[in-house]
Length: 244
Ligand code: FES
Image (tube, rainbow, N blue to C red; front, side, top):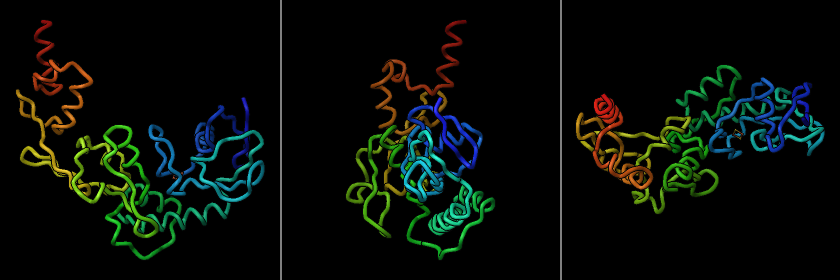
């Protein structure tokens, strides 16, 4: 198996693995935010920085996007890395002061202080919601703008016709920036101005997701099972009764 050096320790890696993956399989800790094992890397948060000392272009690089390579030597805890990470963490906290993972990291690593950015709605621009929507939903949201006006939004800032209401964006957001309100048979995903009908179980009345999400499931699974309009718990009870 090929190997590289992280923090002075030889670490083996598999072909195609990144430095972040190699470090983690070697039991080393490197913080990350915008990387997700199921959604890949985006290289935007810069929390996973490492310093390349040999075997590559010297300098700082995001380890989540840096391919592991034979002879590569990196430091994940050098003074330069620590100072850069504190600055990055401070800038992210200025965008989203309440984000739990950022607060926990700042208690552990320290963070520089920057004036708060009230114009961000708590979004850290990690892009996880955009990638989750692409992978699970209907590609209903995306980045727009540049520099300080960069944000995640819906086309033309209008309620997106494509939103399934699957809540993948909410589930994956590390900053808690995507607020969802459910009431009176409707589900509203506030940042996208998306408001959809909720489907309820025909037996117990439990909410089972939005109408478009339910209809997209019908395409994948047995329509007859879904058409019965039963939630998973009621369906299991019915099947158990049927099989005696
Ligand atoms: Fe690597 Fe965000 S986790 S840049």
